[in-house]
Amino acid sequence: MSSSLTKIWIEGAIAASLAMVLSFVPVKFGPGFSVSLGMIALVLFALRRGLGPGLVAGLSWGLLHFLLGKVTILSIPQALIEYVFAYLAAGLAGVYSSKIKTALQNDKAKQLYFYLVQAVLLGTLARYIFHFIAGFVFWGQYAIAGLSPVAYSLLINGTNAILTGIVTIIAMILLMKKSPALFLPRD
Image (cartoon, rainbow, N blue to C red):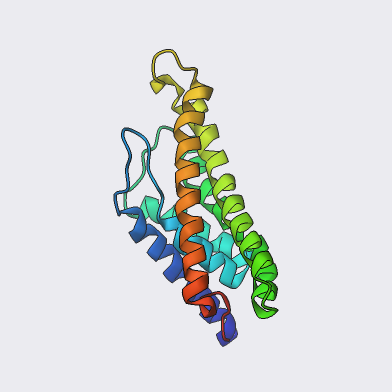
């Protein structure tokens, strides 16, 4: 394995670990509503290193939940959807890695921030689609009286996705303005 590839995987392990640590920071708004600060670390890594490494880091973040006992398991399919597929999907933000790097290197600010927002939205939406599915399939029995399982899951997971997306977009914009070199690895 080349030293460049080794660096990428070490960075990915650090990003997944940082995402997990940030997950322990309580940012809750009432019952069931929260911001997932770990998305900041994962999206930054995915944009820095690309789709493949972003997916692997997302998967690693999801698996760390099992290792650290930060899981609620109702069934194997539910655990796979919520902790494997959802976190893996968050790495899809890496699809925009090359576009962001090109816009940054060519000093195209409008394109840069447009792609940055799209990357965060893609990673966040992809992750929370899985949480939404698990929400109505597996957690629907806990829905608030008067709400269908689908409406309940959309309310909880949709709100969490919006809050997480907004915070992650703000963080990415601030990081880009203050330290654009973070998005351009030097191998």
